[in-house]
Length: 386
Image 1 (tube, rainbow, N blue to C red):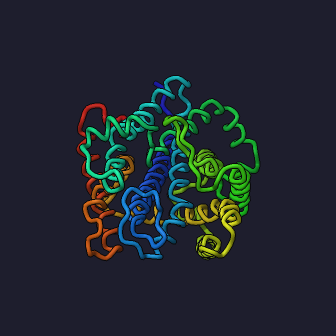
Image 2 (cartoon, rainbow, N blue to C red):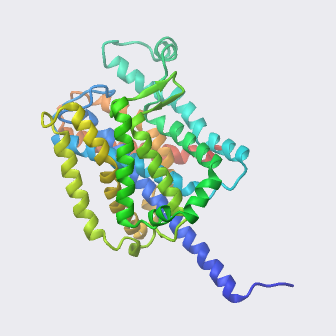
Image 3 (cartoon, rainbow, N blue to C red):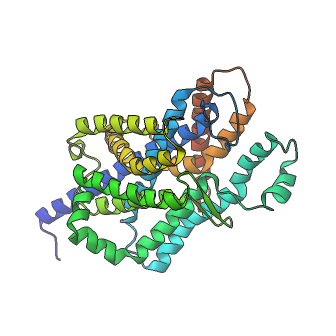
C-alpha cells in the first residue's frame, strides 16, 4: 500500500491550512465591505447635499455624511469585485457550461428575485412618498412597476459580476498565463505598492476616457436587463482582475506581514481622500473638471482604503465566532435595502437627530436582514444560492 512521505503530508496540510486562512480573511473583508454598503444607504437621506433620486427624502444637514458617501463610493463596491475575483480562482477550473449554470444560480436568480420581488418594495415606498400619493401595493406592482423599464437598485452588482465571471472563464487560459508569466501582473498580485498605484492610475485613465463620452456619475439601463455606470466599469473590472491575480500569487491576505508599509498607506489614503473631497466641493471647479479629476483619483483612493481594510479584516480574526457575519453577508447585501427604505419612510420628518436616525436604522436593517438570512438558509436549496 502506497503512502505519502511525512514531509509531503505536512506540506499538503500546511498548504490546506494556508488556503483556508486566506479564504477566511477574504470572507471577513467581504463582510466589512457589505457593512459599508449598508452604512452608505443608511446615511443618504440625511446628507447636507443629499442625492435627489434617493427613495426617501428626509431631514438634511450632516455634512460629514456627504464626505463618507463620497469616500465609501471609492472602495465598497471595488472590494466586493476584488473578493469575487479572488474566490473565482477556486471554481473556474470547471467546464464552461456547469460553471455558468452555477454562477447563474448564485447571481442571476437573486437578481431576478431582487428586481421582481424585493425591488418593487423600494419603488413603492418611493412612489407613495412622492407625487404619486397613496395607492395599493398590488396596483402599483402590476400597473406601475412592471409596466415601465425595470430598475435594478443595488442588485445591478449581480448582473455586472455575472458578466465579469463569464468573460473571465472564457479567457481563463490567457489570464492564467498572464498571472504566471507577465512580470507586471506578478508584481501586482504580490501587492507591490508602486505597481499597485501604477495599475490604479491606468484604471483611472480608462475611466476618464469613458467619462468623456458618458457622464462620470451616469447610469445606463439596457431594457431592464443590464444596469451599470459605464465610467466605473474599468474601475470595477480592474479590482476583479486584481483579485484573480492576487489569488494566483504568494501574497497572503490573512497575515499582517503582507502589509509591511501600512504606516505609509494611511497618510497616503488621508492625503488622497482630502484631495478628492476638495475637488468635489461645490463651486471649487467646473462640473466637467470635477468629474474628470474624480475619475483619475477614484481608483487610487479606493486602493488605499482597500489596503487599510485588509488590515482590519486581519485584526478581526480574533473576533469571537458569534460576532462574525460572513455566512450571512451575501444575504445582508440582498435584503438590507428594502428593509432600510421602509424604516426610513416610517420615521420621515420625525424630530430625531439625523445621525441617530441614520445609524440606528442602519443597524436595525443589518440585524433584521442577518436574522432573515439565517431563517432562509434553513429552507431546502437556499444554501446553494445564499
